[in-house]
Length: 212
Image 1 (cartoon, rainbow, N blue to C red):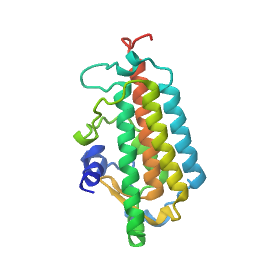
Image 2: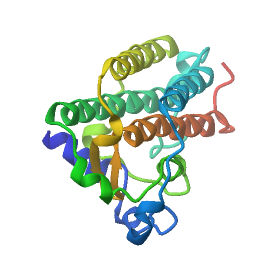
Image 3: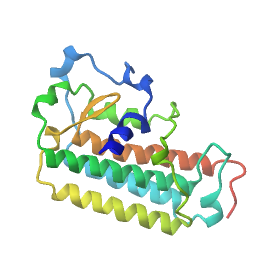
């Protein structure tokens, strides 16, 4: 749990996000917040982000998977490894919340809409340094290996969510940018994958990216 807390506090967001007025609503408007994403929409977004990552990575050679634009930026293989690590951590966090019980008293503290959460995590104008425990270790080499690991875990997460007999709107997770419910945490998970799929496309567009 200590690692998860560190993850939520530091892995993605610096303090600048906590005060982002474009993402946070005034507390006086709590009762006016409406979320239009339903369960089907969330699973569709999970599927969409899975397929987008697959399309971006599938067929790349090992040389392309391991190419790094520079010393500061990840390879495609490292980026997929990071996605896998983060999704596993978020699933563990959700499972702990479900086991602990509903957070009905905290629901009124949620000030972000579903769209706000997706917009926040997919916005790549802010570059955030990942904490050491979520840095890739380089244990993936080929595209097939990376996609198999990602898809196996994502399928496990989706199946687990579908089998969970809970109202995810009644479970609240705290992030540095505010409190969000479990539905929104799943959106955050999928949006994180979309964020890094865009990063992979940036790597592939590098003029030095291998032809094959």
